Image (spheres, rainbow, N blue to C red):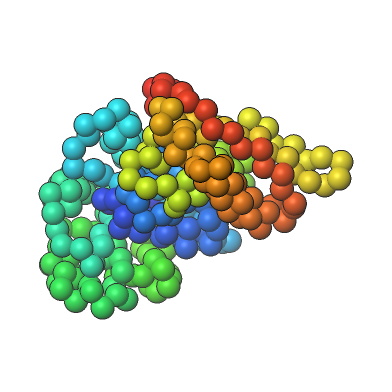
Amino acid sequence: MKSGFAVIIGRSNVGKSTLINSLVKTKVAITTPKPQTTRRPIQGVLTLPNEGQIVFVDTPGLMQKAKDPLTQRLSKYIADSLRDIDVVLYVVDATRTIGNEEKEMLKIAKSIDQPVLLVINKTDSYESRDCIDFYRDLASDFSGVVEISAKTGSNQDKVIKWILENLPEGDYMYPDFQVSNMTNEEQIGEIIREKLFLRLREEVPYTTEVEVHKVEEQKNGVLRIEADILTTEERYKRMIIGKGGQGIKEIGQSSRKELESMTSKKVYLDLNVKVDPHWVSRMD
């Protein structure tokens, strides 16, 4: 039986989180159009009966310069994720030209000793016609290459086949019913944070973190969730709350809707905004 870790790397917004969600057929990683949505390595587990278990590790996207503490922390997470791995999926966006970030990512990918699969994403887009040949020319530098669409799922069977061929023999690392390494609290916090990223503009979502303090099913069957949105400054708190509380209301409504869909329960979400300038330093 095959078993091991497949780490997904690539610059920001190439579709890594969309890919891992599609591969494990469950939403384990949040996705937004903004870079650096993923803040810490998230594991998605795919168990294939009589074939093996693949533990996908979604990593934060590489940013060119790590100037602020959060970006420095994300860069460290990438380096840590590349330890004790079995295979790597290097995801590139066929619609985007190579830039300094991609050149840096390419250096990292080429320096890895383990098998690396070049995954050319968004090949279903008309815009890919201008850039795809460059990425195709990189094929000889890697153990394999697959052209996919993480959005539609095309050719993902080829990705899984390649991974299984290159994983070592071993026992399952997770029970066959488990699809993620996140706790319920962590998964709920990520969903709320996704709604923050989708609603807030410019630098504001990057000043925020979500801490879930309580998840409890009440006697009437309602799932009560208590959570805090942390931000670094009072001015950001005001922006999150919005005029007349409209901002926090919309964030709460969209979060509750997805949480009810995920849990198949009615959800009461108690959401508060607090100023905590030190939350970044407490990240694991």
